[in-house]
Image (tube, rainbow, N blue to C red):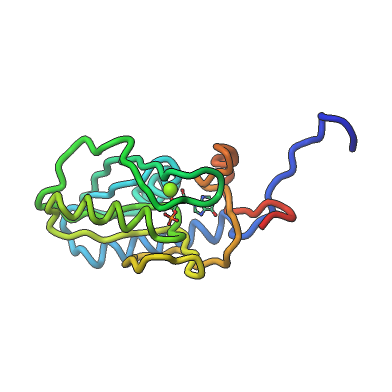
Length: 181
Ligand code: IMP
Ligand code: MG
């Protein structure tokens, strides 16, 4: 292949659509069991968690609501500097609610630990965290995540909401770029 008209290369499959579906169903049932019949308020972190949230909430029985928050970490590309900034706040108060943060991936843990701190300050009745993916080898801060979909090795992954430079969020599976780290 030559010139600038190279066709797109699709990421290799790391976690298939079928495996994601099964695991998200299991997480939804566990979250429901842990909360009894009480209303659960899911707080999804934009943009990466939008697809996970959409599937998770459809698998949940009983009363469930959702809201969205967005953060950006200073620093570019595939590593974050650790400074996290709120770019979109929630629409509703968390006071007295049973809240579950819904996040795409916990990597260094800096984003989640920031989010847990600011959300805990809003006095929810309980605050737990669900992450589809976990990269334990990259952790810089100790952060508690009650619900984890898959623990993966230290590779940059895309798809199912996760992006590289805003691309690949639309893939139905979790993939790795061929030859990429
Ligand atoms: P942390 O603050 O280092 O834990 O970073 C978490 C955020 O970095 C996630 O919410 C993602 O947006 C992004 N991130 C970390 N690893 C990956 C990856 O492998 N693919 C895509 N985004 C990632
Ligand atoms: Mg994210």
